Length: 260
Length: 260
Image (cartoon, rainbow over all chains, first blue to last red; front, side, top):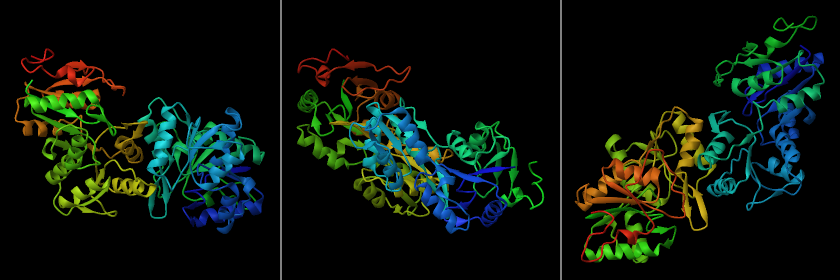
């Protein structure tokens, strides 16, 4: 095993609480020179903010190692729509700023694209603006499909419930969902690592996003069992199930027994 | 035709704009002594407030003639849950007040019932409270299934999108939907009129709510064609389609030609 691509929430930490064994595993890989990167469906922080959060927990990380749905969404939009296209977006400040920096015009009227990102300040008015734009024919892009996100005291509703609300009102809107299970971010991370598919693993705690995305990118996919239900998908089987990230750490002189 | 049960929005008025032919029709029925009542999925106003709105538009109406989802929801809750049951509700003030007056305790924690009503002040926090209660096993009750409601400048998202959001996050929650197409309010209105099913018609502008509910209650159902799409339901055929409520008004000396 030469390269590691890892989910964040549920693998490195849960909400703001580091998972101790995971911190130790990444520290070991850092010392051993095993390259790693992070992929997350979370669009509420920039790559630099995620790296700072990881570093603060003791996991060595830089912004270059983090791939999230903010850059994935702006990449998609830049591929398909010209600069200046009017976009209505729900989301936290880092997503909104990235859209503006990418050349799009944030607006509440006549939007051609509706971007649905996690928004803790969601209001009825924002929901109405999104639905009216979709009714008028705007393309709907969601940062990720997750309906719930685990937090320290339970679950919070995530972007998937917003997408469900919009498509309930506008059944003709078929949203483009950017994050995992789409393998795009995994492929970006693999390009950063420079390792081959065969020698790189994807680690996650959710079958329907992490494992599906990892295998779709051609990687072996490892499920870290956690107290969060992993949401089985019929027919999708992880290449390995582990109880701790330390189970993947090789002793200094040998490769890990799990993958040779 | 001896009795009339009519939808409000899309039949008597659209948003705050009276439909002139409908005003004239209800005035004629009032003068002719044809009894009528109103049924609406709208939970944002009390019966008295709806009656005042109708009177202000020139349609003679009293609170006793109006049946809406506020009383339907409180009736359902009182049938199934004891006084004092903790309830979390989204909705406008009249719904919240009616729930409290009916003996339920409004709360954001440990709710046993989640009532989803139209709420123009919906926030992420309210959505999270509803979803967390549903995750913990609360029964979900929605005032009505409508996903969009027509307003003067287009459509606004309605309760159905909120129900879609909650069930996307909690697929095991199977909401009880109180309003039309359930025939409950139609039966209440029929009881008020005191007319027989055979001689009473249900008038509405939506097949999947008004026509389905009217026919389920055993009434003939009349579709008033409007500029709002009527949302066909395969196999459900109105007993009559009209372009104006005046088409149902008999001249003083004869019955209407439409229904004998």
